[in-house]
Image 1 (tube, helix red, strand yellow):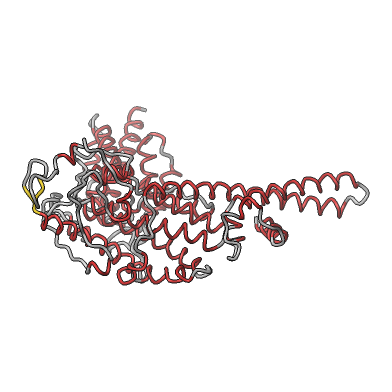
Image 2 (spheres, helix red, strand yellow):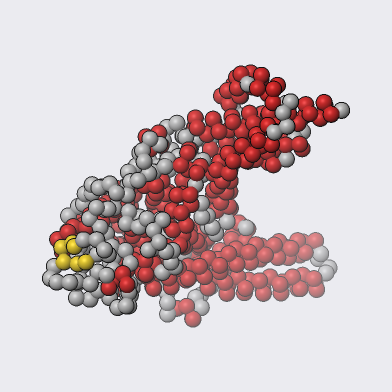
Length: 538
């Protein structure tokens, strides 16, 4: 790979730009060149982050977390806390991308891109300069498609550069070892020339010949658009219940935006708390009044307002030009003005204009929350797990492997051999081994009496299956999350759709170990009962 890049760089430097690209490029700026591969990886991750914030993906995430018995038992039964953990990872991914874009911005001719790093360091103080830089929704979709094309072309360019490097090595070897065979050398010379032309064509279609200003502008504005989308998603989290039938999953961001309005008693905010505290609380959080705070509207450059004359266009932030619904919308008809200064909400109560504006101001606290998390990102990792969790002890991946191995053994206990048993035992940490040994000693009499009965083995196996039904999905998600990150390091394409909150990373360590011990204890009983009965039968 590096050989192909070095060869390409040596003869690309003197070539001129294709005339069909000159009209779209700033020829006075510095070209991206070999950094095209890093930029393509950034574009792939930006596109993946944008798609992960799609309405259907967010609805799917919330539904999975609400239905996950493992999350409720091992992490928290508070949906707000779980969504806050999801937000932390999204902001972490956003911050990593924004930091890379800011580093590229330092190489741009336009000095405004040099200041993007100040926004990442403290977005609350430096947000004013970047107002209105976001794309509208339709234009963002076009930019996403363009970045996807750039990624695909760059992947092809990578493969063709490897082929070119191989052809050139073959040609040099032929010239060195076959001095008398000139025809073969000429044949390979033609192959090298054709391959170089193919690489040049792909290079002209990729960001290689684009300027830093051109690439950074697309990435920067896309990230600012994504930031607005994050604000929207987590602002509406407090307004829409995952079990509500009035807001079904939809593919249109603008449709969902036009159907959701903030309420006075449900402002944007999250109750972030350690897992140990949340288990004793009820999951009925949505009815509580959440306190919010906001900075001055001068800092954000926008005054919260709601147009009363034209309800056909409802917008939030930079997307308002792209959000439109018909006049026949049932939701909007239910909110049509019925006098001056008041609005009728569905079957509930009247809210005057001051209260409606206050709810819009309250929604600004969601922006401040996200900006604050982005500022914290510069000093520490947002994904650091709380104490007494598997992530804090760096055991989440190891315990996931143990659980998956137990799942395989439970599925066929009669096939368990000594090697499999030893492998599982060697994977266990000392704390689980000691606890398991004590459990086995205390339950020795129960095991002896159970051998004579016909039902315990089947009942124990069903009990193990029920535990694995809620525990195994978190383990599989942990393995998948890790493998996705390893794949991203090796390839420029990002395809991860699993968040850490859906894994064992934030799982309570004592509770997870207790579940694993129960599995090991039950598996031991099932195997011993089976072996004892086989001996008695003989």
